[in-house]
Amino acid sequence: MTDKANPISDEALHAYVDGTLPDDERVRFEHAMARDAALAARVNDYFALNALFHERYDRVLSEPVPKRLRPAALRHRRAATNWPWFAGLAASLLIGLGIGASGEMHLANKSAASMAGLNDTSSVQAESTQAFARRAAVAHVVYMPTVERPAQLGASHEHDFVQWLADKLGTDIHPPILSRAGYELIGGRLLHDADGEMAMFMYRDAGGRRVTLSISHRKASTGTTAFALYRDGPVNVFYWVDGDFGYAVSSGIDRRSLLALSHDIHEQLKPNG
Amino acid sequence: MNDRDELMEHIPRLRRYARALIHNRELADDLVQDTLERALGRFHQFEAGTDLRAWLFTVMHNIFASQTRRAAARAHYVTPDDEYAGLAEFAVPGAQMRSLEMRDLDYALQRLPAEQREVVLLVGLEEMSYADVALTLGVPIGTVMSRLSRGRERLRNLMAGAQPVEKLKVVR
Image (cartoon, rainbow over all chains, first blue to last red; front, side, top):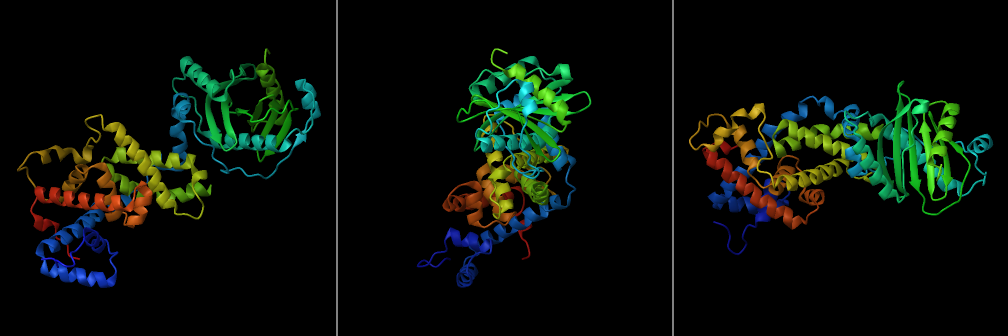
């Protein structure tokens, strides 16, 4: 029988079971239990349930973690569902994984500029452009290992994905074809963070060398810039701005090959080019 | 790769909770995998210095909740795996009850509405405070209390219906 003037609340009952009832209330509660067999039985059962949970499920704690839940495997599963998945998912950019801000090297590369046939407009908003290059480098390092050629990368998937990207970026977009240099398109995704959206196309050659092309719709048009090189650890990034869009080509391949590839990409992406 | 190392430490507890929540081993690990992958993809949203475990449970809850919503239209979300091959017999009154207490628990838990199951397990198994459960699930603390109250009572009745009440007694 509970004390009518001071009934035991449901809240107190559970707090007692879960060990969060303050001392004085606990004493009062135990007195109430001594007078009320039904209450005592209920408390006893609730205790028993908690004990059963542990008895039944604590064994999972000592099970070895299956392979598919280990870090290396976590990357792999994403890969299997590249186009269809990322198209709908628009994953967020992972900052700071495995690549730091060290080793920055900003080159107004004159020879690159002349090769690309661009006017060197010097450092137009160099800072934000370089931030874009850094994002591209980070994205290359973070996402590239997760990309493997999906079992059936159908032409329609690719078409849908490219169409979807074009809508997102607000431009007609076509991934350049790099087969002349031996690179094949193997995947793509859209990243977004505070700086806006960035489309990525990933390529790979027969030797497993990887190249990522990043395209970002810039908030403010900044005209056109020369090629610049940004280097982050083992990753080189050639990047440039053309009107509303920033482009970055990231890879661990040597700088000369990357520059040639960038030139090819630039030609293909030029309006009416 | 500190982020990944830190995540690794929490995998056993995430798995324990998922197993109790879903009880099919493969599906439970699927949930853990989805949770880890989403957490890795959104690590920048995690505020350093706050409770990583609580954040991971929040991520897991969000995935579980959306799966549950999607599955609501389908008849059977949970299918017993080999370990629980004998589960169907529980549907038959008067089936053999010997030493099946643990399976009863699996079964009874699955009979709880998902939202009550989550609260009962976060409190009873994960030993989270009511306030942390409220944060994890994104609901007011009063909602936590009412789900806990209904969930525990329902679970108690389910267990009592499956076998003599004496079996529930635990020395404490």
